[in-house]
Image (cartoon, rainbow, N blue to C red; front, side):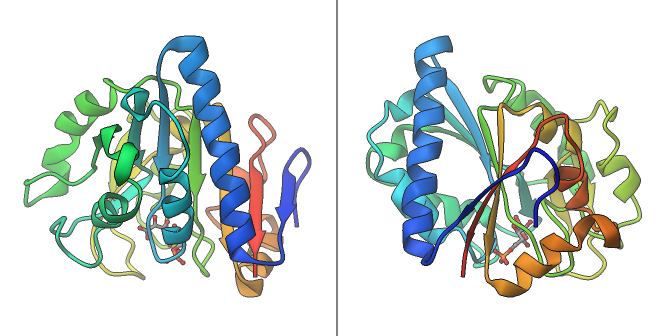
Length: 231
Ligand SMILES: O=C(O)[C@H](O)[C@@H](O)[C@H](O)[C@H](O)COP(=O)(O)O
């Protein structure tokens, strides 16, 4: 399924995949803690990563030196079942990992565009470039909140976009979104694509030919992603 340079980690069970990826991420975070005193990660929400987050939270790390943010967020109250922040708080920011520094992408602003200056300032407090970015992918080939029908998709995927975050109206999915832009993701030390199920594996395989937004990750060779797949 991969383009040149991408490594594939294929598992028989989601549980073993999650265990292996949690260890891989924790090792990367530990390397940055040792090398620069702090580490950073952006994680995706959605339905898939609950098991990964529970396993990652259980890894022994000095979590007070870890900075966590989201790849993207739905513009809903953080108490909503659709909130990615809620998922991260309930699964990843638990036990010792509750000491991590978390920056959510949802503010109290009714209009997400008004939140951008505050979010840019908040993200600038993280150790950058990010140590890891964990991307999910939708059946329509979106990743982050880079949705195929979004009117500003070109800007979201512009490698020279100076804005680290942007608002996206997905058109084909509920809720306005706040999302990291492509340059922030590509600048990370490691990009992981976290993919579950045969249908998504097929989407990934045709991403470049179909010009899906996820091809901005899979068809570039500047910073090849690793794929972590389970049925
Ligand atoms: O908030 C979101 O919608 C996401 O962060 C999004 O990019 C997600 O990773 C994919 O849509 C896959 O979502 P599922 O895991 O729910 O299939």
